[in-house]
Image (tube, rainbow, N blue to C red; front, top):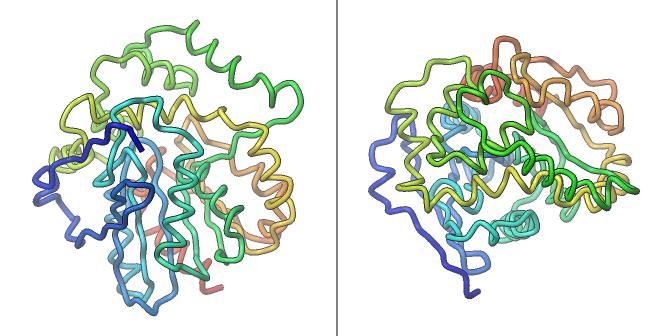
Amino acid sequence: MNKTILRTPDERFTDLPDYPFEPNYVTINGLRIHYVDEGPKDGKQILLLHGEPTWSYLYRKMIPPLAEKGYRVIAPDLVGFGKTDKFALRKDHTYDLHVEVMTKFVEALNLAEINLFIHDWGGLIGLRVVHNLSDKFITIMAANTGFPRAKGFKGLFGHMVFKRKIKQIGKVTAEELWDNPTFLRWVAFSQTVEIFDIGELLQRASETELSKEELAAYDAPFPDESYKEGPRAMTMLTTSQLRLNKKVWDTTFKTWNKQFMTAFSDKDPITRGGERTFKRDIPGARDINHPIIMNAGHFLQEDKPIELFELLTNFIEK
């Protein structure tokens, strides 16, 4: 592969609160991919995909009740996050890479009849995996995510315009970001801030007060700034494949008749209202109740884990 790979030392993950899960690993494209695999192996399969800048720790409050209910729960860490390997160079973290690795991950574990839960960048990646392996998925639940796409002029030049806007914004301090948390400010912040404080980000974007130990668990995958090129890169990749995503949307999801449910939160300034496009365009999302999770921020797995657990299981069983 000829790319410098970083691996977070295992001792960084010792005694994390509410994360007793045994590690599992599979090698894909020369990268060690970590995943949680809990519950009976013959249970109905639930695949939980996290986003930016979290890891499978985000689902620690949902995994045990799902497993206890008899589901097989699989929660991988994306490349650059959690216990999974990380590229040292920002340019090596690409949208295509994430899609390819997660597609091969599903194939490597021989998963089938998957109930998919996607959040944040887990949606941008997960929906592409569904497109690649559509026969393997039976339900999809989307929370605080999106699928940026465009055709025509915007599809051709949207990413270039986006990068120019970020450059024009320049440096954004934490105070400026949280005073007016727009998506463009967030991206500019991620590219320019000297110390990318993952724990602070989780706290700022959650309504629940996280403990020092929980914040430390979110920081655990990143011993120093050199390990954070994945989280920094991901924000800039959002508009990098507008035309391809438009094609995927039109060919797969505008004709997707399998059950598709959204569960967005009311206090996420970035994705709030994003459920409308799913409800409008996807046939499988019609005639379904799409709840808004109240009093929850962007990381609603921290704020309303049991409510999400109940919504997800009721949705699957229905």
